[in-house]
Image (cartoon, rainbow, N blue to C red; front, side):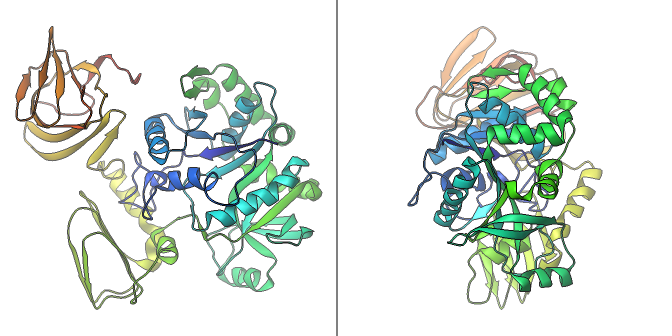
Length: 482
Protein backbone atom coordinates (compact mmCIF):
# COMPACT_ATOMS: atom_id res chain seq x y z
CA UNK A 1 0.00 0.00 0.00
CA UNK A 2 1.30 3.45 -0.90
CA UNK A 3 2.51 5.70 1.93
CA UNK A 4 2.24 9.49 1.61
CA UNK A 5 4.25 11.49 4.17
CA UNK A 6 2.24 14.46 5.48
CA UNK A 7 4.79 16.88 6.94
CA UNK A 8 3.41 19.63 9.18
CA UNK A 9 5.62 22.71 8.85
CA UNK A 10 3.26 25.39 10.12
CA UNK A 11 4.63 25.97 13.62
CA UNK A 12 6.15 29.18 14.89
CA UNK A 13 9.24 29.38 17.05
CA UNK A 14 9.69 31.10 20.40
CA UNK A 15 11.52 28.62 22.65
CA UNK A 16 14.66 28.63 20.46
CA UNK A 17 14.77 32.42 20.22
CA UNK A 18 16.87 34.29 19.13
CA UNK A 19 17.87 31.68 16.53
CA UNK A 20 14.22 30.93 15.77
CA UNK A 21 11.86 33.80 14.83
CA UNK A 22 8.21 34.13 13.91
CA UNK A 23 9.10 34.59 10.24
CA UNK A 24 11.84 31.94 10.37
CA UNK A 25 10.78 29.25 12.88
CA UNK A 26 12.86 26.33 14.09
CA UNK A 27 11.93 23.85 11.33
CA UNK A 28 14.04 25.95 8.94
CA UNK A 29 17.09 26.00 11.22
CA UNK A 30 20.22 23.84 11.06
CA UNK A 31 20.41 22.97 14.74
CA UNK A 32 22.69 20.07 13.76
CA UNK A 33 25.28 20.30 10.97
CA UNK A 34 24.30 19.26 7.47
CA UNK A 35 20.57 19.85 7.24
CA UNK A 36 17.73 21.88 8.67
CA UNK A 37 15.08 20.14 10.75
CA UNK A 38 12.67 20.26 7.80
CA UNK A 39 15.28 18.79 5.47
CA UNK A 40 16.05 16.10 8.02
CA UNK A 41 12.35 15.20 8.13
CA UNK A 42 12.20 14.95 4.34
CA UNK A 43 15.35 12.88 4.13
CA UNK A 44 14.77 10.42 6.96
CA UNK A 45 11.86 8.75 5.20
CA UNK A 46 13.64 8.43 1.88
CA UNK A 47 17.35 7.76 2.28
CA UNK A 48 19.66 5.05 3.49
CA UNK A 49 19.21 1.34 4.27
CA UNK A 50 15.88 -0.18 5.32
CA UNK A 51 13.86 1.87 2.81
CA UNK A 52 10.13 2.37 3.30
CA UNK A 53 8.26 0.40 0.64
CA UNK A 54 5.82 2.20 -1.67
CA UNK A 55 6.80 5.61 -0.36
CA UNK A 56 5.30 8.47 -2.38
CA UNK A 57 6.33 12.10 -2.63
CA UNK A 58 5.39 14.02 0.53
CA UNK A 59 2.77 16.69 1.04
CA UNK A 60 3.99 19.60 3.17
CA UNK A 61 1.48 21.67 5.15
CA UNK A 62 2.67 25.17 6.02
CA UNK A 63 1.60 28.79 6.37
CA UNK A 64 1.36 30.98 3.29
CA UNK A 65 4.31 33.17 4.28
CA UNK A 66 6.66 30.17 4.55
CA UNK A 67 5.81 28.56 1.21
CA UNK A 68 8.97 29.61 -0.61
CA UNK A 69 11.21 28.64 2.31
CA UNK A 70 9.70 25.15 2.20
CA UNK A 71 10.20 24.91 -1.56
CA UNK A 72 13.79 26.14 -1.45
CA UNK A 73 14.82 23.85 1.40
CA UNK A 74 13.26 20.83 -0.31
CA UNK A 75 15.08 21.73 -3.55
CA UNK A 76 18.42 22.04 -1.75
CA UNK A 77 17.85 18.70 0.00
CA UNK A 78 17.13 17.09 -3.37
CA UNK A 79 13.86 15.62 -2.08
CA UNK A 80 10.90 16.84 -4.17
CA UNK A 81 7.39 17.04 -2.79
CA UNK A 82 4.02 16.47 -4.39
CA UNK A 83 2.16 19.47 -2.99
CA UNK A 84 2.57 22.31 -0.52
CA UNK A 85 -0.78 22.79 1.21
CA UNK A 86 -1.03 26.38 2.37
CA UNK A 87 -3.01 26.91 5.56
CA UNK A 88 -4.74 30.32 5.49
CA UNK A 89 -4.60 30.29 9.31
CA UNK A 90 -3.30 27.92 11.97
CA UNK A 91 -5.96 25.46 13.17
CA UNK A 92 -3.81 22.81 14.91
CA UNK A 93 -3.03 19.29 13.74
CA UNK A 94 -6.51 17.73 13.32
CA UNK A 95 -7.70 20.18 10.61
CA UNK A 96 -4.28 20.06 8.93
CA UNK A 97 -4.36 16.25 8.66
CA UNK A 98 -8.02 16.29 7.61
CA UNK A 99 -7.42 18.73 4.77
CA UNK A 100 -4.39 16.75 3.62
CA UNK A 101 -6.44 13.51 3.75
CA UNK A 102 -9.21 15.06 1.66
CA UNK A 103 -6.63 16.06 -0.96
CA UNK A 104 -5.16 12.54 -1.00
CA UNK A 105 -8.63 11.04 -1.37
CA UNK A 106 -9.70 13.44 -4.14
CA UNK A 107 -8.80 10.97 -6.91
CA UNK A 108 -10.34 7.96 -5.16
CA UNK A 109 -7.05 6.75 -3.67
CA UNK A 110 -6.72 5.47 -0.10
CA UNK A 111 -3.01 5.61 0.79
CA UNK A 112 -1.47 5.35 4.22
CA UNK A 113 -0.73 8.79 5.66
CA UNK A 114 2.50 9.18 7.65
CA UNK A 115 1.95 12.41 9.56
CA UNK A 116 5.10 13.93 11.03
CA UNK A 117 5.99 17.30 12.55
CA UNK A 118 8.77 18.99 10.58
CA UNK A 119 10.68 20.33 13.59
CA UNK A 120 11.78 17.15 15.36
CA UNK A 121 15.30 15.73 15.49
CA UNK A 122 15.87 12.02 14.82
CA UNK A 123 19.51 10.97 15.12
CA UNK A 124 19.01 7.38 13.91
CA UNK A 125 16.93 7.62 10.70
CA UNK A 126 17.36 3.91 9.96
CA UNK A 127 15.68 3.02 13.26
CA UNK A 128 12.89 5.45 12.42
CA UNK A 129 12.33 3.79 9.04
CA UNK A 130 12.24 0.35 10.70
CA UNK A 131 9.55 1.62 13.07
CA UNK A 132 7.51 2.98 10.15
CA UNK A 133 7.78 -0.34 8.31
CA UNK A 134 6.62 -2.15 11.47
CA UNK A 135 3.66 0.17 11.84
CA UNK A 136 2.64 0.04 8.16
CA UNK A 137 1.41 -3.56 8.43
CA UNK A 138 -0.99 -2.64 11.23
CA UNK A 139 -2.08 0.63 9.61
CA UNK A 140 -2.90 -1.23 6.37
CA UNK A 141 -5.14 -3.51 8.45
CA UNK A 142 -7.15 -0.48 9.57
CA UNK A 143 -5.50 0.40 12.88
CA UNK A 144 -4.60 3.95 13.87
CA UNK A 145 -0.87 3.76 14.57
CA UNK A 146 1.19 6.21 16.59
CA UNK A 147 4.83 6.14 17.61
CA UNK A 148 5.94 6.24 21.24
CA UNK A 149 9.51 7.18 22.09
CA UNK A 150 11.22 4.86 24.55
CA UNK A 151 11.92 7.25 27.46
CA UNK A 152 15.46 7.78 28.67
CA UNK A 153 14.64 10.11 31.59
CA UNK A 154 11.61 11.16 33.65
CA UNK A 155 10.63 14.07 31.40
CA UNK A 156 7.82 16.33 32.61
CA UNK A 157 7.53 18.26 29.35
CA UNK A 158 6.09 15.41 27.26
CA UNK A 159 2.76 13.63 27.23
CA UNK A 160 2.94 9.85 27.70
CA UNK A 161 1.33 6.81 26.08
CA UNK A 162 0.52 3.84 28.30
CA UNK A 163 1.14 0.50 26.59
CA UNK A 164 -1.68 -2.01 26.26
CA UNK A 165 -1.66 -5.60 25.02
CA UNK A 166 1.26 -6.61 22.81
CA UNK A 167 0.73 -6.94 19.06
CA UNK A 168 4.34 -7.75 18.16
CA UNK A 169 7.22 -8.47 20.51
CA UNK A 170 9.98 -8.26 17.90
CA UNK A 171 11.99 -5.07 17.66
CA UNK A 172 10.48 -2.58 17.41
CA UNK A 173 7.68 -3.69 19.73
CA UNK A 174 4.07 -2.88 18.86
CA UNK A 175 1.24 -2.63 21.41
CA UNK A 176 -2.34 -1.51 21.57
CA UNK A 177 -2.77 1.79 23.44
CA UNK A 178 -4.12 1.60 26.98
CA UNK A 179 -4.31 5.35 27.61
CA UNK A 180 -2.87 8.77 26.87
CA UNK A 181 -1.47 10.62 29.88
CA UNK A 182 -0.96 14.37 30.20
CA UNK A 183 2.42 15.89 31.06
CA UNK A 184 3.13 14.49 34.53
CA UNK A 185 4.70 15.82 37.70
CA UNK A 186 8.27 14.66 38.30
CA UNK A 187 7.34 11.93 40.77
CA UNK A 188 4.78 10.49 38.36
CA UNK A 189 7.25 10.68 35.47
CA UNK A 190 9.76 8.72 37.55
CA UNK A 191 7.11 6.05 38.16
CA UNK A 192 6.34 5.90 34.42
CA UNK A 193 10.04 5.44 33.62
CA UNK A 194 10.56 2.73 36.25
CA UNK A 195 7.53 0.73 35.12
CA UNK A 196 8.69 0.40 31.48
CA UNK A 197 5.03 0.57 30.44
CA UNK A 198 5.03 4.11 29.07
CA UNK A 199 6.35 5.93 26.02
CA UNK A 200 6.75 9.61 25.20
CA UNK A 201 4.08 10.84 22.81
CA UNK A 202 5.97 11.96 19.68
CA UNK A 203 2.90 13.21 17.79
CA UNK A 204 3.66 10.99 14.75
CA UNK A 205 0.82 8.97 13.19
CA UNK A 206 0.36 6.37 10.44
CA UNK A 207 -3.11 5.39 9.20
CA UNK A 208 -5.23 4.90 6.11
CA UNK A 209 -6.80 7.99 4.58
CA UNK A 210 -10.29 6.46 4.83
CA UNK A 211 -9.72 5.47 8.47
CA UNK A 212 -8.82 9.03 9.43
CA UNK A 213 -11.73 10.60 7.55
CA UNK A 214 -14.14 8.16 9.19
CA UNK A 215 -12.67 8.83 12.65
CA UNK A 216 -12.72 12.61 12.38
CA UNK A 217 -16.26 12.41 10.98
CA UNK A 218 -17.32 10.29 13.94
CA UNK A 219 -15.76 12.36 16.71
CA UNK A 220 -15.52 15.85 15.21
CA UNK A 221 -17.96 16.16 12.31
CA UNK A 222 -17.71 19.95 12.59
CA UNK A 223 -13.99 19.82 11.73
CA UNK A 224 -14.60 17.45 8.82
CA UNK A 225 -17.41 19.60 7.43
CA UNK A 226 -15.34 22.80 7.64
CA UNK A 227 -12.36 21.12 5.96
CA UNK A 228 -14.60 19.73 3.22
CA UNK A 229 -15.95 23.22 2.52
CA UNK A 230 -12.43 24.68 2.54
CA UNK A 231 -11.14 21.97 0.20
CA UNK A 232 -14.07 22.41 -2.20
CA UNK A 233 -13.43 26.17 -2.27
CA UNK A 234 -9.68 25.70 -2.68
CA UNK A 235 -7.52 26.26 -5.73
CA UNK A 236 -4.41 24.67 -7.19
CA UNK A 237 -1.55 26.99 -8.17
CA UNK A 238 1.34 24.96 -9.56
CA UNK A 239 2.87 23.12 -6.61
CA UNK A 240 0.62 24.93 -4.11
CA UNK A 241 -2.91 24.12 -2.96
CA UNK A 242 -4.79 26.87 -1.15
CA UNK A 243 -7.91 25.84 0.83
CA UNK A 244 -10.74 28.35 0.87
CA UNK A 245 -9.74 31.07 3.34
CA UNK A 246 -13.17 31.86 4.81
CA UNK A 247 -14.21 28.23 5.25
CA UNK A 248 -10.89 27.27 6.83
CA UNK A 249 -11.10 30.20 9.25
CA UNK A 250 -14.42 28.79 10.50
CA UNK A 251 -12.85 25.41 11.28
CA UNK A 252 -12.47 24.66 15.02
CA UNK A 253 -8.90 24.35 16.26
CA UNK A 254 -8.01 20.99 17.81
CA UNK A 255 -5.19 18.46 17.97
CA UNK A 256 -5.27 14.89 16.67
CA UNK A 257 -4.90 13.59 20.23
CA UNK A 258 -7.85 15.50 21.67
CA UNK A 259 -10.09 15.36 18.61
CA UNK A 260 -9.77 11.63 17.91
CA UNK A 261 -7.08 9.57 19.62
CA UNK A 262 -8.10 9.86 23.27
CA UNK A 263 -11.72 9.12 22.39
CA UNK A 264 -10.80 6.20 20.14
CA UNK A 265 -8.64 4.65 22.89
CA UNK A 266 -11.58 4.85 25.29
CA UNK A 267 -14.10 3.41 22.80
CA UNK A 268 -12.07 0.91 20.75
CA UNK A 269 -8.50 0.40 22.00
CA UNK A 270 -8.18 -2.67 19.75
CA UNK A 271 -8.24 -0.30 16.75
CA UNK A 272 -5.12 1.52 17.99
CA UNK A 273 -1.44 0.67 18.04
CA UNK A 274 1.77 2.27 19.30
CA UNK A 275 5.16 1.38 17.83
CA UNK A 276 8.08 1.76 20.25
CA UNK A 277 10.55 4.22 18.73
CA UNK A 278 14.18 4.23 19.88
CA UNK A 279 15.86 6.48 17.32
CA UNK A 280 17.51 9.35 19.19
CA UNK A 281 14.33 11.44 19.02
CA UNK A 282 13.91 14.95 20.40
CA UNK A 283 11.22 17.54 19.78
CA UNK A 284 13.94 20.23 20.21
CA UNK A 285 11.46 22.05 22.40
CA UNK A 286 14.01 24.16 24.25
CA UNK A 287 17.70 25.04 24.38
CA UNK A 288 18.14 22.60 27.27
CA UNK A 289 16.64 19.72 25.27
CA UNK A 290 18.96 20.59 22.39
CA UNK A 291 21.93 20.54 24.79
CA UNK A 292 20.91 17.05 25.91
CA UNK A 293 20.99 15.54 22.41
CA UNK A 294 23.97 17.29 20.77
CA UNK A 295 27.61 16.18 20.95
CA UNK A 296 29.58 17.76 23.79
CA UNK A 297 33.24 18.46 24.45
CA UNK A 298 35.08 16.92 27.39
CA UNK A 299 33.73 19.65 29.70
CA UNK A 300 30.12 19.04 28.67
CA UNK A 301 29.84 22.12 26.45
CA UNK A 302 27.91 22.25 23.18
CA UNK A 303 29.69 24.89 21.10
CA UNK A 304 29.04 26.24 17.63
CA UNK A 305 30.58 29.16 15.81
CA UNK A 306 33.31 31.57 16.90
CA UNK A 307 33.54 30.72 20.61
CA UNK A 308 36.45 30.84 23.06
CA UNK A 309 35.42 29.14 26.30
CA UNK A 310 37.86 29.01 29.24
CA UNK A 311 37.11 27.00 32.39
CA UNK A 312 33.51 26.55 31.28
CA UNK A 313 31.34 23.44 31.70
CA UNK A 314 27.91 22.14 30.71
CA UNK A 315 26.98 25.16 28.59
CA UNK A 316 25.34 25.58 25.21
CA UNK A 317 27.09 28.42 23.38
CA UNK A 318 26.07 29.35 19.83
CA UNK A 319 27.70 32.20 17.92
CA UNK A 320 26.31 33.24 14.55
CA UNK A 321 28.13 36.44 13.63
CA UNK A 322 30.87 37.37 16.13
CA UNK A 323 33.22 36.09 18.82
CA UNK A 324 31.77 34.92 22.13
CA UNK A 325 34.37 34.78 24.90
CA UNK A 326 33.16 32.94 28.01
CA UNK A 327 35.08 32.55 31.29
CA UNK A 328 34.08 30.34 34.21
CA UNK A 329 30.51 29.82 33.00
CA UNK A 330 28.51 26.79 34.06
CA UNK A 331 25.09 25.48 33.02
CA UNK A 332 24.27 28.46 30.81
CA UNK A 333 22.67 28.96 27.41
CA UNK A 334 24.39 31.72 25.43
CA UNK A 335 23.08 32.36 21.93
CA UNK A 336 24.25 35.20 19.69
CA UNK A 337 22.80 36.37 16.36
CA UNK A 338 23.48 39.47 14.30
CA UNK A 339 20.86 41.47 16.21
CA UNK A 340 20.45 39.80 19.62
CA UNK A 341 22.27 38.01 22.44
CA UNK A 342 20.38 35.78 24.88
CA UNK A 343 21.86 34.47 28.16
CA UNK A 344 19.93 32.22 30.53
CA UNK A 345 20.50 29.42 33.06
CA UNK A 346 20.09 26.12 31.24
CA UNK A 347 17.40 24.94 33.66
CA UNK A 348 15.30 28.01 32.77
CA UNK A 349 15.59 27.59 29.01
CA UNK A 350 11.87 26.75 28.79
CA UNK A 351 11.12 30.31 29.94
CA UNK A 352 12.71 31.98 26.89
CA UNK A 353 9.21 32.46 25.50
CA UNK A 354 8.63 35.00 28.31
CA UNK A 355 11.42 37.13 26.81
CA UNK A 356 9.76 36.89 23.40
CA UNK A 357 6.41 37.93 24.88
CA UNK A 358 7.98 40.97 26.56
CA UNK A 359 9.76 42.04 23.36
CA UNK A 360 6.56 41.57 21.38
CA UNK A 361 4.59 43.72 23.82
CA UNK A 362 7.25 46.41 23.45
CA UNK A 363 6.71 46.39 19.68
CA UNK A 364 10.26 45.30 18.89
CA UNK A 365 10.99 43.52 15.57
CA UNK A 366 13.38 40.89 16.96
CA UNK A 367 10.69 38.28 17.84
CA UNK A 368 9.54 38.18 14.22
CA UNK A 369 12.52 38.57 11.93
CA UNK A 370 16.28 38.24 11.75
CA UNK A 371 18.42 41.02 10.39
CA UNK A 372 18.66 38.87 7.25
CA UNK A 373 15.15 38.49 5.83
CA UNK A 374 14.43 35.72 3.33
CA UNK A 375 12.31 36.35 0.25
CA UNK A 376 11.37 34.03 -2.63
CA UNK A 377 13.88 35.85 -4.86
CA UNK A 378 16.72 35.76 -2.30
CA UNK A 379 17.29 37.83 0.84
CA UNK A 380 18.10 41.25 2.22
CA UNK A 381 19.99 42.30 5.33
CA UNK A 382 20.02 45.59 7.18
CA UNK A 383 23.53 47.03 7.36
CA UNK A 384 22.95 50.49 8.87
CA UNK A 385 20.12 52.94 9.49
CA UNK A 386 19.53 56.40 10.89
CA UNK A 387 17.39 59.47 10.50
CA UNK A 388 15.94 59.39 6.94
CA UNK A 389 18.34 56.74 5.60
CA UNK A 390 18.80 52.96 5.57
CA UNK A 391 21.44 50.70 4.02
CA UNK A 392 20.74 47.12 2.94
CA UNK A 393 22.66 44.28 1.34
CA UNK A 394 20.41 42.56 -1.22
CA UNK A 395 21.08 39.11 -2.69
CA UNK A 396 19.11 37.91 -5.73
CA UNK A 397 19.23 34.26 -6.85
CA UNK A 398 20.14 33.48 -10.48
CA UNK A 399 17.09 33.91 -12.70
CA UNK A 400 15.06 35.57 -9.93
CA UNK A 401 13.52 39.02 -9.88
CA UNK A 402 11.90 41.41 -7.45
CA UNK A 403 8.41 42.69 -8.20
CA UNK A 404 7.74 45.66 -10.46
CA UNK A 405 7.06 48.24 -7.77
CA UNK A 406 7.23 51.81 -6.61
CA UNK A 407 7.56 53.71 -3.32
CA UNK A 408 5.68 56.79 -2.15
CA UNK A 409 8.16 57.91 0.49
CA UNK A 410 11.68 56.89 -0.47
CA UNK A 411 14.30 57.00 -3.20
CA UNK A 412 16.98 54.35 -3.67
CA UNK A 413 20.60 54.13 -4.84
CA UNK A 414 21.80 50.70 -6.06
CA UNK A 415 25.47 49.68 -6.26
CA UNK A 416 26.34 46.30 -7.79
CA UNK A 417 29.09 44.50 -5.86
CA UNK A 418 28.78 41.05 -7.45
CA UNK A 419 27.11 39.67 -10.57
CA UNK A 420 24.97 41.41 -13.17
CA UNK A 421 21.74 43.33 -12.59
CA UNK A 422 18.97 44.00 -15.06
CA UNK A 423 17.24 47.22 -13.97
CA UNK A 424 13.82 48.47 -15.01
CA UNK A 425 13.32 52.16 -14.20
CA UNK A 426 10.24 53.71 -15.73
CA UNK A 427 10.49 53.06 -19.49
CA UNK A 428 14.20 52.19 -19.32
CA UNK A 429 15.66 48.67 -19.10
CA UNK A 430 19.44 48.39 -18.75
CA UNK A 431 22.22 46.21 -17.34
CA UNK A 432 24.64 47.04 -14.54
CA UNK A 433 27.82 45.09 -13.78
CA UNK A 434 30.12 45.12 -10.77
CA UNK A 435 31.05 48.57 -9.40
CA UNK A 436 28.31 50.28 -11.42
CA UNK A 437 25.37 52.08 -9.81
CA UNK A 438 22.03 53.70 -10.52
CA UNK A 439 19.41 55.89 -8.85
CA UNK A 440 15.68 55.12 -8.43
CA UNK A 441 13.73 58.35 -7.83
CA UNK A 442 10.80 58.49 -5.43
CA UNK A 443 7.61 57.40 -7.22
CA UNK A 444 9.37 55.68 -10.16
CA UNK A 445 8.25 52.19 -11.18
CA UNK A 446 11.25 49.86 -10.97
CA UNK A 447 12.37 46.26 -10.89
CA UNK A 448 15.63 44.46 -10.06
CA UNK A 449 16.45 41.16 -11.82
CA UNK A 450 19.35 38.74 -11.92
CA UNK A 451 19.81 37.49 -15.51
CA UNK A 452 23.12 35.81 -14.69
CA UNK A 453 24.25 32.38 -13.55
CA UNK A 454 25.73 33.53 -10.22
CA UNK A 455 24.05 35.30 -7.29
CA UNK A 456 23.62 39.05 -7.65
CA UNK A 457 24.60 41.21 -4.68
CA UNK A 458 23.91 44.92 -4.43
CA UNK A 459 24.12 47.58 -1.75
CA UNK A 460 20.93 49.62 -1.55
CA UNK A 461 20.90 53.04 0.10
CA UNK A 462 17.38 54.26 0.87
CA UNK A 463 16.60 57.87 1.71
CA UNK A 464 13.30 59.48 2.55
CA UNK A 465 10.76 60.42 5.19
CA UNK A 466 9.50 56.85 5.72
CA UNK A 467 11.48 53.65 5.11
CA UNK A 468 9.10 50.89 6.24
CA UNK A 469 8.70 47.67 4.27
CA UNK A 470 4.99 48.41 3.81
CA UNK A 471 5.82 51.34 1.49
CA UNK A 472 5.71 49.04 -1.53
CA UNK A 473 3.11 49.22 -4.31
CA UNK A 474 3.43 46.09 -6.50
CA UNK A 475 2.32 46.14 -10.15
CA UNK A 476 3.64 42.73 -11.24
CA UNK A 477 5.06 39.87 -9.19
CA UNK A 478 6.03 36.39 -10.40
CA UNK A 479 5.53 35.08 -6.83
CA UNK A 480 1.94 36.36 -6.64
CA UNK A 481 2.45 38.46 -3.52
CA UNK A 482 0.01 41.28 -2.91
